[in-house]
Length: 365
Image 1 (spheres, one colour):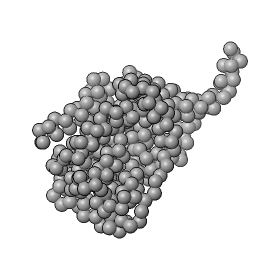
Image 2 (cartoon, rainbow, N blue to C red):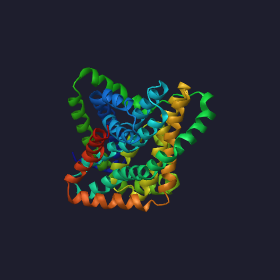
Image 3 (cartoon, helix red, strand yellow):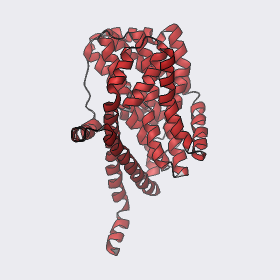
């Protein structure tokens, strides 16, 4: 027993790297499984909601609700692009849904942060890292939705881009994460037909993998991994932005990319200032899938919708990056408050991502 302990101590970095890799896979698989189970609950409902909207304000909240249900802005955007290409939805009504999808997609990383709620210091760091994405998207919509409503600047600019790129065709990207996690999730779906059981399993794996990731990251921080993150990947804001953009383009999911930052923040690897540009890069990277899908269809309206998503995210960055102190301060203060009152984070998710959209959709319709 003593020999095993000595062997572990001599190779502590290797063991924790292996633990980190295994936990990371379980974490990514739990997100895929969660998305699979939630789509079993509500994909049909989401499609129906999206296809019947005629009011831009309703469309905004439908985008939030549909994406919160499906846990994927890429899925919502793909549905919207398909409905526009099929003539079911027009461009003017599609753009607010895309804006709402940007808000709804951040529910995943916020949920991921709740797994550390019993450890106050780690939770405060994790929760602030999660909601920085929420607050940026909410602030972007607050400024840009009225501007879009009265000027249709996104529609005009996206139309110009769409006309230039309409005949270029598309490319289907292979997501290595999807390739590794989707097949086993599909097998479990076939074996277990109850979405409640799949969701419960996904939440258990999420909790288990995150706690192990934080444990491994803490050890690696002690052994200089912190310096690697500080000096290489997140040394500058631009570099952090590019990491978020490239990683999200590769995995085709901003939910996965931003959720990865949650345990790293909890372990003290990343600060809120470093995470902010990283999430902005993720916002740009997540638009690539829809743009490629739209280019494959060759439908001008679908291409315009896809480019409007890209332009909306670029506009949000132009407006709020110079004033980054606003979302960073809001996230930091709200996380501090939520750490003292542990019911607040749960109410925040329930109210912002589900209750408010459902009530306002009902009233507006």
